[in-house]
Structure formats: C-alpha cells, structure tokens
Image (tube, rainbow, N blue to C red):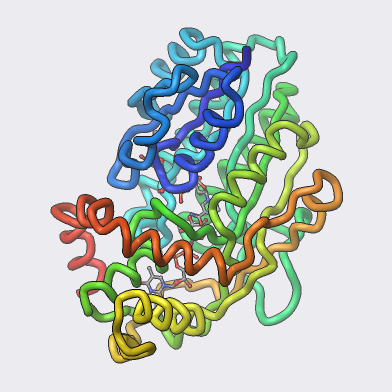
Length: 348
Ligand code: NAD
Ligand code: DAU
C-alpha cells in the first residue's frame, strides 16, 4: 500500500492531481494536506471526497511539528508537493509570504520527510512541482530546456527557484530520492479567478473591463490542467531519481490573441454578437518586471517517458470557457468578500 501525501490538493492543479490519483489508484492512500488559503477550495473535490482511499487534512506546510506528525501518522512513502503561493501579482505586493510558504514550507516538508524516513529511502520519493518561470524570460526565439540556467525575476519565481534548489540539495546531500518538474501556464476548470483566463471570463460575463497589462504582447505557453496531472502521474511513477522534467504544450499565445479567442467564444456561448465584448478590453499599466515570453521544450518527457498533451488547444479552451459559464455558482462563491477587496486594490 502506498501512502502518498499531496500538498496543496485543494488548489487548482492539486485538485486535478488528487482526483486523478484517487480514481486511478484505489490501492493507494491519498492524503491531501492543504491550509485552505484563499486559493484552496474543497468544493473542487466534491466528487471524490467520500472515496475510501482519500483523506483530507487541514494544515500548514510551514508547521514543521505538524508535518513530522503527519508523516509518522500516515506512514507517508511518497510526496507530491504542490502547495504554494502561486500568483505573481500577489508576490509583487507581498514577497515575504512567498518566501515563507514556498521556501520555508518546502524546507519544512523536506526535513520532515528526511527525519521520518531516517536514511531508509527504499520506495520513497519526494516529487516537487515547479514552474517554467524559474528560467526567466525568453525573447522571440528558443525554448526553455531542463539545463537552461535559472534566472527568476519576480518574487514568486525567485521563491520557486529557491525551493527547487533546496530539493536538489536534499538529493545531493542526504541521498533523498527526488524529482522536479517545471511546467508552463495551466488552464482549465477550478482555477482561482485572479489568473488571466478565469478572471477575464468572469469579467466578460459581468460586462466589466478586461485589464490587459502593457500592450498584451507577452507570450505564454498554455497547457490543459488535466494533461499536467497526467504528466505528474507519469513522472511520479517513471521519473528518474534526481532528475528534472519540463512539461509544456508547445502552444504559445500572445496574451491579446488569447483574449480575443476567449471573447469570441464566450460571446457565442452567451448569445452575444461574436466579438462584441472586445469593447471591454482596457490597456492598463504593465506588471512590474513582466517576463516577455515563456516557452517550454518538453521533448525529454516525450522521448524518455512517452508523455504528450492529449488535448488540442481549440478543444481545451472551448471546454474551459463552457465550464466557467456553466459553473457560475462556483465562481460566485469565491468572488465575494475578500476577493472583491483584492480586486479593488489590484485594479484600482
Ligand atoms: P493555487 O494557488 O491554485 O493552489 C495552491 C494551494 O496551496 C491552495 O489550495 C492553498 O490553500 C495551498 N497552500 C498555500 N499555502 C499553503 C501552506 N502553507 N500549507 C498548505 N497548503 C497551502 O496554485 P496552482 O496554480 O494550483 O499551483 C500549484 C503548484 O503548481 C504551485 O507550486 C505552482 O507554483 C505550480 N505551478 C503552477 C502553474 C500554473 O499555471 N498555475 C504552472 C506551473 C507550476
Ligand atoms: O508559467 C507558469 C506560471 O503561470 C505559474 O508558475 C504561475 O503560478 C501562474 O500564475 C502563471 O503565471 P503568469 O503570471 O503567467 O499567469 P497570469 O494568469 O497571472 O498571467 C498570464 C499573462 O496575462 C501574463 O503575461 C500577465 C497577463 N495578465 C494577467 C492578469 C491577471 C494581464 O494582462 N492582466 C491580468 O489582469
């Protein structure tokens, strides 16, 4: 019996990973540890919460004593670590909480694993989920590969880079079995509406301005979240000890082009003349230190472990837009109170 700790499982990507593992591996115990910050939402897991191989624990990865108790109580043999502060704009306003959660929280988990496993690393694995943002920004050519030099620019990416270094240090120093993956931008159901796609869909629905940073020329490489979860499954089971894998969709979009696709599709589904919501586009002051372009080369993952995205972008984005329009209650429940305060401060 494998007892796998998934941290941040109530968040956007984490909930898809928990769902996949709980459904696909009834013989594993899946323990979802989440602090339930503003970004964590147990509504994301309603469909699997009663499964016998699933346990939810509310807790904080920074609480070292709690993490040690958790490892011992559940006899944890594997970790898939997703818990993090994940939004770049918030990191610009409050870098301390990013260092605390992403760096100190990761270190606390690593140390709890090390003490519990006590040098017996047979059938153990610490899998750390990271981001392509650690590699910095590309101009108009080339891709990030696994050996690209780290060059983070935002407090968020600096904290993720630091946590990656700690994971590698535990592998090199203590022999802990580890693996890291660095993924591009995810999209799909259950993403908190502070990120581009769900934020803009919510604003289109309410006829609110669409705040495009700078000229909208920044480029991101978008991957459907379920394909990221599938990659995590493959890497967890077949990844080479101590190795790194890049995950991406070879699917680059300039923000403004993606926004126009969203507008066209949402207008059609909302019964509005196609493109009529383009009038909501509002160019606003650029994000500080805004990385121009991210583009992941995931050839290694394809060649070595046979993973490829399963969904074409056209299908994935239509599915995603339909989901947000069909799940108004999910969106409305998390866009009241604190969210409204964040929104006013961020976009005043
Ligand atoms: P998210 O913000 O939606 O979810 C983060 C989850 O972590 C939430 O459920 C939150 O409650 C939990 N959490 C935060 N602090 C915690 C703490 N101290 N203790 C326990 N739980 C805590 O994030 P996401 O977009 O799902 O990203 C998940 C991971 O994937 C992150 O590590 C992120 O860096 C990485 N990542 C994200 C993307 C993306 O496009 N969203 C791409 C590549 C990598
Ligand atoms: O690349 C992976 C990263 O992708 C993850 O590590 C992060 O956790 C995740 O948040 C995401 O970071 P980005 O900064 O790329 O995502 P975001 O959705 O915040 O922004 C996408 C692009 O859209 C970016 O160029 C900024 C722009 N943008 C974003 C918002 C929220 C706008 O123009 N206006 C906005 O209001």
